Length: 593
Image (cartoon, rainbow, N blue to C red):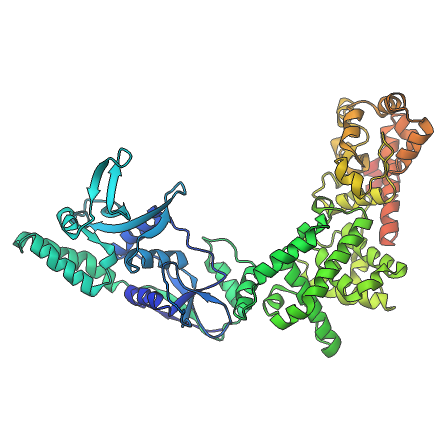
C-alpha cells in the first residue's frame, strides 16, 4: 500500500464531484448533517479555518461499487477516478450548499426534514465584532422566512433585487463565475454604481469571496494497489465520527461491483434460516460470510495444504464465485446445527451459550452433511461442542480457533486424534459458584444439560421440551428461594449460583414463592395433588438431592448437587473433572464434592 498527499482547491474538488469523477464507495452511509452543521462549516470556510483532511482512494484497484454524491444526477453515471473514504459529510455539505444549485435537503436539530438555501450576510462577514456563524443565513426553498404560521414575512430574498437590498450573497453562486459576475453587475446597478456600495462589494470580494476560491482541501490519496482489508481498516481508523464499518457492508460493496446484491441475498436467507429456528437469529451477515470463508479455506487446504483461516482479512478476500458455490450448503449447515442444538435443549438466542461457536459448528455440519445424524459422529461433534462451552473457549477473538476446529473435528471423525478444543477444555469445581447469571456461557450450558437430562417441572411434571419451553415461559429459578436464603443470612455467592437453580415454568416459580423447600414441596403435594414419590422423581430429574432439599439442609444440598452437576459436565465433554477434594474446593463449599 502507498499513498500521496495533496492540497487540491475546494473548487476543483467540488467540480470533480459534480462531474462524477469523485464518487463514494457504496458501503458509505448516507449524508446526515443538519442545518446547524452546514452553517458552521460555511462559517469556517469563510474564515479560512481548517476543516480537516479528507481521504481518497484511487479508483480501479479494489472493485467497489461506486455511487454518486447526494445531489449529483448523471445518466449514465461515469466511472469514477477517485472514491472518498473519509470526509463524505463535509464534502457533501459543501457541494450541496455551494455548488449544486439546488435547495439542500437537510434537517433541524430535532430531526425534522427541511430544505434550505444558504446566503452570506455581507455586512456581518465584514464586521470583526460579529460572530461569523451569525453571518450564515439559512432560508427555506421559497426564499422567504415567515412567522405566525406563514402569515407574516420576516425576510424575503426571492429576487435578486431583494438580495441586493438586504446585502445577502447567495452561496450557490460562489463557484459559478458567470453567475457571480452577473450578480455583481446587478448589485452595482441596484446601488447606481455608488462609490461606497462599490467599495463595500470590493471588500467582500477580496476578504470573503476570494477565501473560498483559494481554499485548499488537505487530502490523502491511497493508490490503486491498496488491498481491500487495508481500505477497511483505514476507513474505520479515520471514520471516528461515524458508525463502525462491518465486514458485511464492505463485502456488499465489493460484490455489488459484480452485480450481486449481497444485502438482498442475506435478507432473504436470514428469513429462511430463522423462520423455523429461533436460535439462528444470533447469526448475522458477517457470521455467515465468515463460515463461507472458513469452508472455502478448508477446501483449499485439502487441495494445496494451505493453512485454514477465516480471519477478517480472509473474509475480505472472499471470492464471489466461492460464495456462490458454498452459500447453499452453508445455509443447510446452519439449519443442521440448529436442529442439533434443539436436541440439546438450546432453542433460542437467550439459551445459546456462544453465538460465535455457531460459525465452526455450521461449517462442520456443512462439511459432514447428513453424516452428523450417525450416532457415533454426532456424539463426537457434541463432545467438541460442550467442551467449547464448559471450557469457555469462545468468549474472545475466535477466528484462530475456528481455523483449527473444522479440520480437527473432521479428522477426528475420520479416525484422527481429539480436537484441540477438547484438549484445551478445563472446568474447575469452584467455577460453579461464580456462575451467577445467564451472561456466562457455562451457566446457559448447565441449564440446557438439565433440560436434556429430562428435567420435569415441579408442579406439572411436564418435560421441558421445545413446546413447553416457549409456551410456559421456562427460565432458570432458585430451588432454595431467594427470600428464604436472605432470611437465613446465607452467602449470596452460594445461593445465587447455578448450583441452586433449575429451569422451571414461570407459574411454578410463583407458586414456590419465598418459602422453605419443605413448605413449598408440601404445598405442591396438597394443592396440586402430586404424590410425594412422584414429586421426588420430578426433583431427581434436575439432579436435586431430594433428602437434603426436603430437610432444608442447604449446605449439604449445595455440595451434593454441585457434584451431580459436575457429573453432567463430565458426561457432556467426555472429560473427567479433577479438584473435588482440593483445598480451594474445600474452602469454597465447606467440604469435598
